[in-house]
Amino acid sequence: MGLMVLGVLAGTFVAHVACRRLLARWALARIQGSERLSAVVRVVEGGSGLKVVALARLTPIPFGLQNAVFAVTDLSLPNYLMASSVGLLPTQLLNSYLGTTLRTMEDVIAEQSVSGYFIFSLQIVISIGLMFYVVHRAQVELNAAIVACEMEMKTSHVKGSQPSISGSTTSCNKRTVAFSGGGINIV
Image (cartoon, rainbow, N blue to C red; front, side):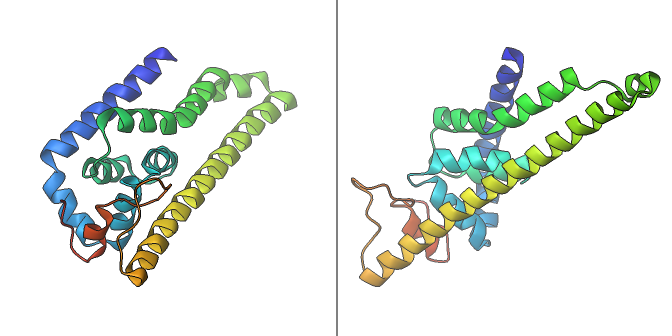
């Protein structure tokens, strides 16, 4: 278990630093062309950034894309590592559990008992069901955070002011205005 957590931290650290140092310009150009990715960046840089990173790690969105998007945000490296580790933990625990408890197909076939097939099938069905549930919940939460940020932006534009960031639990931050104007201008 400790080795797994250490591996997650090391891999996440290397990927984040590499993306931040080598791919930031390329990632910004790609994000600029995508409304959805721009919204994710706005939300990550806002008050719910840690939650969004953790939830995104539970979804089937490719980690390379996630790493590139998160690398261009102003989320600090320690916070990013913590949120990524928390988000990856359920999947890693499930994989570790399955790896230690599932028997090989050879064991199940050699036993040739109904109970062996039943337990093996039940473990697979529960694992798949749990995976789909977790992914679905993560996507719902992520979409809700993005919609909240977009609604806050629309409200602030209607009022003619910038989003309030002091003393509130806002989803967006001061850099949101730069992201919402069509082009990405990091201030």
